[in-house]
Image (tube, rainbow, N blue to C red; front, side):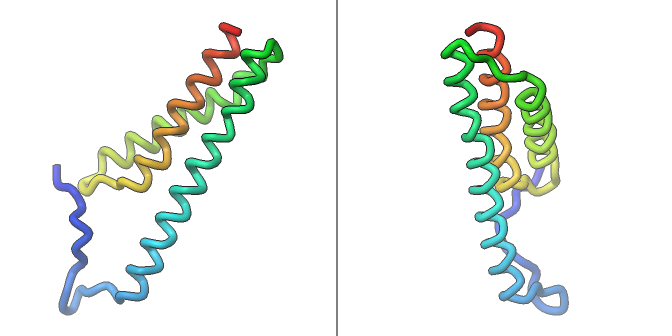
Length: 104
């Protein structure tokens, strides 16, 4: 499986440098936003341990979503690292939240 080397086509197939720059910025912002969304499960995990368990449905769906997107990013011809990196916290924090609902 090949890995994206961040080298873009040149010549007639060249991608405009401004578009490349915008996509890289968008990729970084989306990755940071996605990680922040999943890190926000920490208060729910704390609530679970404090004896006020939250509903497991939303974190369970987030775990499944994170697994699917991580698998997608990993399975592409060129590994999609922003997608992989952004969704691994969803797998971890979603799963920990679901588990702590039942073992508080």
